[in-house]
Length: 185
Length: 427
Image (cartoon, helix red, strand yellow):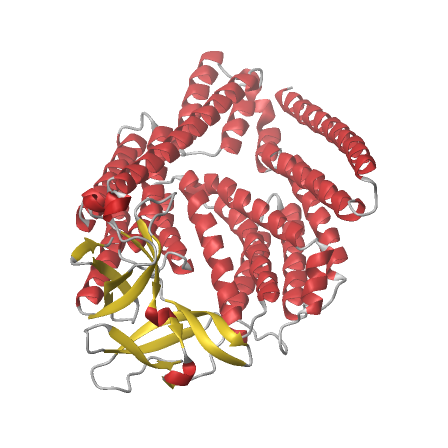
């Protein structure tokens, strides 16, 4: 009786471990198999008083003008938006189209998932979409970056190396600023 | 009620019992209760049968056991929180896989220790259960920790489901009733969150206020279902002690949800912002409603000694589910505030009455507390804008003192009634 209970209890514990490792492993795989893009951003806030070495960033692709982009133009706040990116001449990726569904209309493009935060202009004819991707706040893990003076100050431009995983979700990996690299957790 | 009837039937046997046998039996009974082999109700019934002159000794032991359980649970929660804080504090110093390994090793150690103390050595069963609780809390927190480590959105109801479904087998296989509390709470949170999201996605429109109707309605329906599940567990031998955590989540969830629905302003806003067109039936809602009614029906139909009470409970649960379902499908009626006030106070009184009939002090206290909270909320709701501030607080204070006096008087009468019942059984 006790041996049977030990077996099933151990199986339940093993299932928990498998779930945790499975989430981690599957996500690790999806990241490794994802696409890497370089995005330009501006530092909105170099420091978070409660969480420490967090950088608040405003991406160039965070403000999208529907008149300048191909694809759909009838988004509402809270809706999912798929932004199609292609590399520019300087290696930084730029938005070329926006869609309601995941699709790629240009050779070599990457589709990245975001959410429309609010509309610019008037609601019946928005002049821009403010889009959030979930990478607007990044934690810099490098020990040298603990000192505020060692990190990019407010208003500075920088680039962020981002991996777009198999589901189109972006994951910030590295912040590049004036020849320096900061790992992101 | 079951325990009371069992004791009453068997009362005369105690007269000729050898005192030393009764002494040894009481010690054994207390050990069995601690190991979860028998329920608290059964322990009381055995004590009333074999040691009628000394029921208070067993009661003292049971109270000491409750204290041990409470201290152990607080210790388990503190330990789990400490491990999570340690991992969080050293996050950037360790790799993701090392962090994950640390969490896994801590979980295995807690579960192995808990299992050994509860089933192998059987010396510290409550401590063993507390270690299992700590392991489960660590697992549930670990799900969110891993999600955050790998940039999976943590504001997702599915993580709650993963946490809940992982912890439930531990509760049953380890016979650890306390593990059920966080597991059921996480499951309820998942169901409410998921159904709200489901309705929002289905309607494809900005109807936030209606999403609250669905989410809170689902909480109440789920809580009614848990009441039926609680009674079914009581009849399944080994899991009789699981009735308490089911009832705790059910009672608190139902009363909290119903209190939310008693506000007039809420229903006025729902009436002013109705969902576009008739709300679309959602699979989550149907599943929860059918499941809840089935659990209540099974509880009523399989009841033996306490059939009347179970039937009344099932009927009341089905009535509450019906009212909630109607409100979810036809939400644009301001009169729901009055209806849900009636339902809220009826349920609070029902919980109090159930507690009295079954000698469950938790039900009595939570029922009386709900009545008090409901009266205070309604008083504030109605008189805040009407009365001058000074008069509001003076009258409110007097009302509260009157309510406190009435509740204390009711509590004293209930306690006297229980004590008289115990003495009667002992005689």
